[in-house]
Image (tube, rainbow, N blue to C red):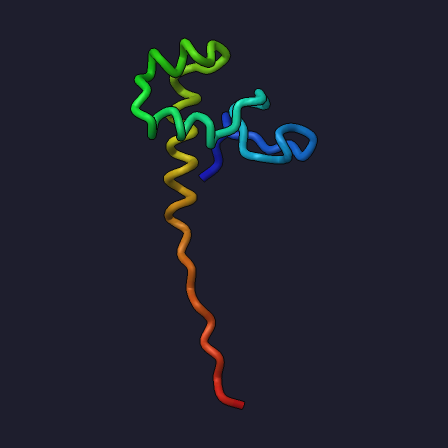
Length: 77
């Protein structure tokens, strides 16, 4: 899933997924939600953000959890 609100820049925040090239990592937004901050509280703490940014961060995090790990099975040689 591609979302233009989620950006990556090796020169900014060590290449972490950020919101719209701001120095606000997706992980920070997700942690705010996980700590039960409300949307208005998050927007007050980070006035550069918009509601759509928070939605995009959660969608991005959800997409990452959908990745599947398939173990490789070695065959006898």
